[in-house]
Length: 230
Figure 1: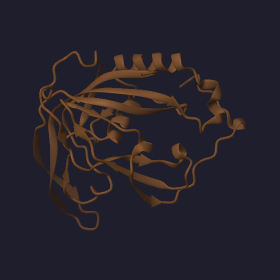
Figure 2 (figure 1 turned 135 degrees about the horizontal axis):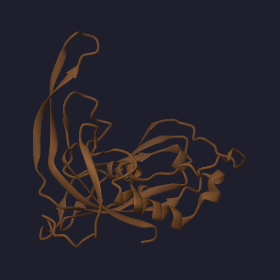
Figure 3 (figure 1 turned 90 degrees about the vertical axis):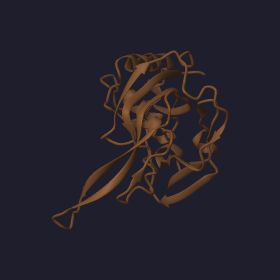
Figure 4 (figure 1 turned 60 degrees about the horizontal axis):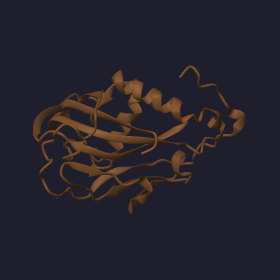
């Protein structure tokens, strides 16, 4: 696919949850990363306002295992802590394919729409482990990124037939990307086929819920600012 990069992301543990329902004390990870979590990872590798990243597919390289940890959450209205149980994924590794498209809602950045430049920078940033710290769903789960020849290494579920993963959080529809005056949340019903999860595009999600109204920021050509130092 055009403007596509591949990389491996791994870590000792991960916590991929639905941010709408994780405001309570207990947290439990999905079996695989969400689209939004992988988008956050690739944006930590390389991001510019000129482009929008899309996750194409992901390979689950290691067995899905969990570990439970007790976490002391601070009580903000009392001088005490609460003990909560978090269920993390343990020893995770994924191969990811992603590609970028230009953000057409940024007319002020039309002069920065250079495919070769952004693709080459993204590949260099993958080789360097990313521009920013990589987190696997939450800040206490440190991740690491490396280049990979996608599909060459053997994955744990390569011989496993289709596994339905139920209804999962897909991501957010932000007004600056959609142009609508509404922040929305998306869900979908993925399946893992021989260890591969193929993601649908955000606009293909049919399970969408409005959260609250937000006005998208309007960018005009006269607001152009140089990006050469980014």
